[in-house]
Structures are given as C-alpha cells and as structure tokens.
Image 1 (cartoon, rainbow, N blue to C red):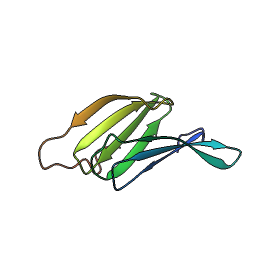
Image 2: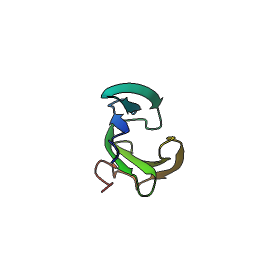
Image 3: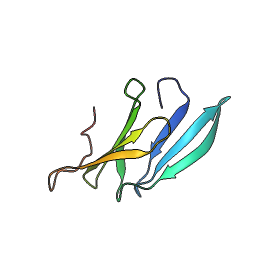
Amino acid sequence: MDKEEKYLYAGSKIGAMYVYKINDFTLHLESVLFDHSQEITYISVSNVLNVVATSGTDGFVNLYTYPNNRMFRSIKLKDNLPADYVIC
C-alpha cells in the first residue's frame, strides 16, 4: 500500500501485479500488470520518488512510475540470483 493509502499493490505466483484503488474503504481493481514471468516476491512503493518497485523469482527487478504504473526500467540480476529480497 502507498503511504497515502490510495493504492494497494498485490503480487501473484503467476507474475501478475494487481493494482487496486482505494475509495471509501472499498477496493477497485484498476489494472493488472504481467511484467514478471514468475512469482512476485516483493513490492515497494516510494511516494517520495513516485516509483513502485517489484522483484521476483524470475531474477528481475521492475520499476514503475507512480501512480500511473507504467514500467520504465527492468533490471536482470546475475544468473542464478533470484530477486526475492533485493528491494529494501
């Protein structure tokens, strides 16, 4: 969830990230992003930088603009190094 509690981000085992907008204590699915090929293990939101970062078992770290959720960078880590807990 972002700091202002306007958006909720959820990863999945199939590599999809679900973006929900929060209105009056109700979740509305805004978009589904399929940029990972395997499980998303971590999502971090920075309201200061306007960035959402995801990492997954496919070895990629993806960066998205916030709040419009457009991927602007995908970083492949070294072979055999999954991105499970790279983002802090």
